[in-house]
Structures are given as C-alpha cells and as structure tokens.
Image (cartoon, helix red, strand yellow):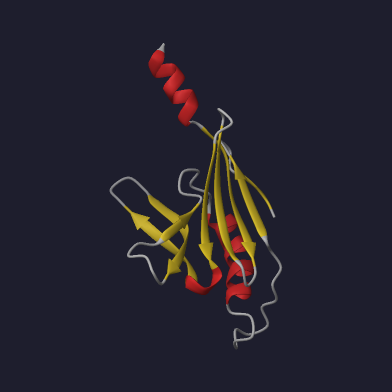
Length: 126
C-alpha cells in the first residue's frame, strides 16, 4: 500500500519548458500528486540548445538539452516523458531562434515560446 502511494506521488502528469527571452528558461515537472518541481536558468548563462541522442542496447532516444556555461552537465528538458523527435524538433527551432536572435541563423524567426508535454502519451501544445 505504501509502495502504491509512493509510485502515485512520483508519477508525472506534465513537463514544460517556458522560454522568456532575455530573462531565462524555466523547466517544470508536474506530478499527479499536485507537486511541481521548477528549475530556472538565467538567460546569460545559456550557451545553446541541442537535440542529442542516447543509444543503449534496447533503444535510441532523443532529448532536448541546454548547454549552460556554469554547469558541468547538460540541463535536460522533458527528462522523464521521453517525447518523440518531431516534437523536440519543433520546440528546438523556436528556442534556438530565440537564443541566437540577432546572430546569422538564416531565416529562422522565433515561433515557439512554450512546450508542454503531458504523459503518458506525450501530446505537445506549443
């Protein structure tokens, strides 16, 4: 009974990335229990955003990550829901354009400011 309660407490309802240009990026994890975990990264410490892949013996998984200058590790967006590549690409394009606005990145215009993935089917609202 305690194990079931613990599993319910840790179950993810949604994850989101909110990009506030020139302010920062806020990552949120919403749990079924109502608990919310937030992580804020200051705009000036974000070097870039990437889509990377993780390969193991059973699967290849893609993830969206921020390169942050004052951290040794990548900061992952949507670390638990494991969204599909096409959703990550849409969010990446908008975030990348915002980070590099004013630089020569082709014709990319900032289009997306919010990515929300809801489990377990990981639907995307942008």
